[in-house]
Length: 267
Image (cartoon, rainbow, N blue to C red; front, side, top):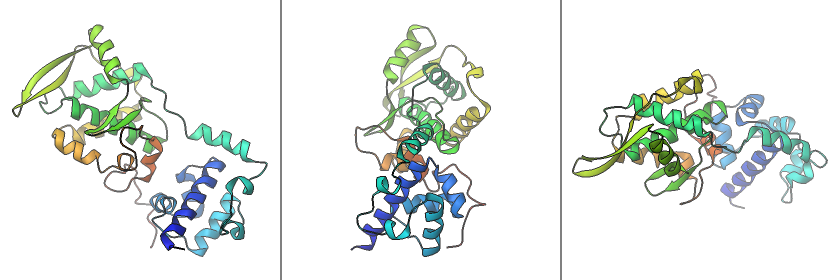
């Protein structure tokens, strides 16, 4: 059997067992004393597992090593009688994003306020600032910021239902849409007419948004689009389909917003 295929199967089995246990990658990595990026690479099938690591994983995830390495291993068989309880825990951790419309509107307003006067911040840049705010927050806290769902489209990730929300905000006099010429191209921009309600944002949420703005708000539309196309959630998604927030946990530098300095293991 091809070693890459074997690694991929091992990674898939570890992922399934971890989720059935209701554990995050962070939880499991700490339990087996490896870094979370290493665990992410194992689950993707890009990194092998040594005997010591496999023993540790078997203790934490409660599987028999003989059964685990067999051709006919089944996660459902290994956890017979416990699947329902573990599945419930998994559902609690891997939450389905639910759009918080008021929160989304205030995040949008806050970004527009912070970027007021920046001629490069048209629709393309705005969409990416929203995307990175949402996915960076989820990677850090395993909670949704706005709960917006993003779809993989040719020019980058785009929030779903955005046109409807923009329309509502324009009708209520919260923002104004304008067309401007920028480098010989027509650009759609939005001007905030009211201030964001910052009581809607937790300090941790505002901090993540501020960091995204500081890092990327001066980038051109082509630069930020190119950057988003190298991000793991984008790369691992199919054209036209929804981008899964869980893919943020498979990021590596420079996209990952976690600080792994204290977790780096000796290879």
